[in-house]
Image (tube, rainbow, N blue to C red; front, side):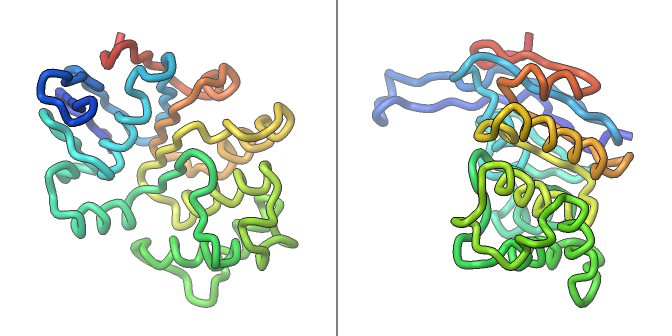
Length: 223
């Protein structure tokens, strides 16, 4: 079953706001991700990988084409509708720390859980997930006190809580050591439910190797 689909996506930007300096970030991009499939998106810097992820997440809208999440149109909806769909059905890992700085790790996870279809009362699910991710003793810590590896695992907890239908990750291991990267990837593979679809934007060969399929973006096109 298809959980995430991009149909003929185009995205243009203007350098310095000038009409005559329009740059195509994405050109006619098509991508289908099925339940349980993990897809790695690779390509050089500036090729359009992060732009694609923003469109898939409903954080930006395409200039042409559409994005569909579990059979519902995600693109060109109201921001409130996009946020609701994202909260109910999608986990998103952004580059760096996507954690809210004034909340503890546990509070960040509980906030994400509150948007899921059937959040468990009392934070039981969050506590269990944090323990499996090796963050039991750090659950009451603020994000600023975490190491790079701990931050990556906390971001993963926020994205994975409630078993979303789709997981999107932008360079999930960019700021960790090689050993920490291996641990984050192990946890990602172990904690991701079997029917959750995943799209991982990455420069890392190690991340690409754990994917079921790899697509390459060059100059805004999937090649």
